[in-house]
Amino acid sequence: MARKTPHAIVHLKELQTFLYKRVTAPSRTTRARRGKNYSACSEVENVIRSEAGPGALERIEIYSAAYFQRLLECLKEDFPATMAVAGEIEFGKLVREYLVEHPPTEPSIDWAGRRFARFLAGQSRIFQPPFLADLAGLEWAISEIFVAPDCAALNAAELRNIAPESWPALLLRMVPASVILECEWRIAGVRRAIENSGQWSDPAREPATVIIWRRAGQVYFRELEAAENEALKVMSNGATFDRLCEILAERLGDENPVEAINCIFAGWIADGLLARTPAVDAVADGAQSKNRRARKERS
Amino acid sequence: MGGAIEMMVEFRKRNAFPFLGFGAGLRRPHYNHILDHHPRMDWFEVISENFMVAGGRPLQVLEKVREHYPIVLHGVSLSIGSTDPLNRGYLSRLASLARRFEPAWISDHLCWTGVGGRNLHDLMPLPYTEEALRHVAKRIRTVQEILERPILIENVSSYMEFTDSTLSEWEFLAAVAQEADCGILLDINNIFVNAFNHRFDPVTYIDMIPIERVVQFHMAGHSEHGAFLLDTHDHPVREEVWSLYDYALRRFGPVSTLVEWDDNIPGFATLAATAEEARRRAQAADGAKDSTRDRASQRTPDVSL
Image (cartoon, rainbow over all chains, first blue to last red):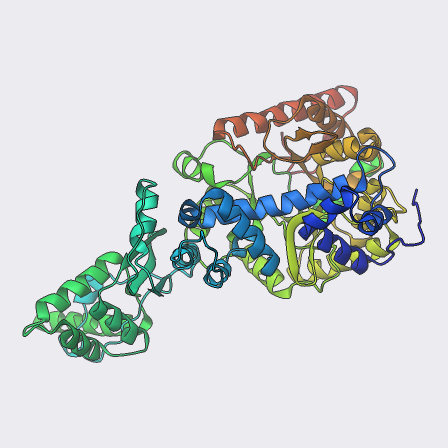
């Protein structure tokens, strides 16, 4: 059955390495098929049988075409706005170059686009919109947050259970399914416009901070004001509630910032941004048992 | 044949492989319909990698589906034939997923998907050699030890064969299953596609697969692409593939059957109708056998059509 040749690849590892190179470098086999590279052609024919039906090169090109097409489809799904802005043809070219530079290494194809934003940041094509890398960064963050770890969010009732004296030292944390992105361009509006209507206009080149988070299985994003951004960052670094309020008061600059601070906290709670942590549970439980004891004593 | 059926019953009993009936691949467009209506479907097969994530909606959906249906984990990235070391992180995540969702079994493909730490995300065929046979069987045994359960290995569709092959595809599949002591997920459409692409008789293929090892069938549609048939999973099952399924049912008896549809995915009703067609054909094959001999005492206790 086997047709041995003097150059046949004997060992499995050698065969797989050879095929990997052929499948991921379609232009080489195409050139070979056209007769411009006879050595590549005969190498493939030494490895792949072609006594009956289509030739060895035609067979390997099925895998090459499928490789790029499958990954292109995957990246189209992950970066719909990036593709809308770049245009489908240019996006396809970018993806091909990206795959040569950053071939997939993870078992799940869903991770194939993880370096795409960084790759775009390193490109300087004439027709490439300068905000494309920022936009791809936002879209990748949306994909990551979609499957980030679960965590129950704090609700208003749970916060009400916290005794007033526990608030100053309280340590709050954002849910793990959240991330803050620093952008050079105001791309959140572009992503939203494309999502809603397919229409978009060039964003302003202004530093912008975007928060991306998940609530009830759905991923959301919005731009952050400077004060809120700083408060969330210090909160993530372990600042107490007291310290958060100080920062917000400083940044907001109001004489009486309580109302504005309340408004920001209410927003975080409504958005499901604050995690229900053991520390908060302990304080809330403590307050509840204290209330229960008080009620019992009264009765 | 009688002895083979006894061995099949023994193999399935020993490895706790139940007969699940007739199911479909769980795909995103059908999530809401399944969660809202709990439609009739004996079981679902899920792509393991889609749920090997930290959290979010995919896992929530799977939890709800699992409350109502048996499931099976079907992987595409085990890369059992690769010469790279086994990916222990991947196997650990797969084991966690299995502990959480308690699938009836775990399956993957007899292929390699990457080499040198890079992934092609395709099911690449192996050369059918003694070297590949020993290599794959050893790795399946290791995987089964890590997962603490036997797995099923599926025959893949392919568009090339290798000059170094010394065995036929069916000899290779049967020998791997035997040496690794694993089950076989027999994809009937892949046999048909490969028979066309590589010019062999699909009936010979089916005749040479050890009955006792076959735990599951896959049914799917393919498409024509010039001189090739492509395993695209984007069409209804072709009549010729149904005929091959009928033949396989006559040889293997009742086998859990799964309808795969991955592109141009139709409404759930079409999937359900295809699973019902598989059930109808299995009942017909079973009836035909029962009229000539009594197999009831030989059948696995949990088998029902």
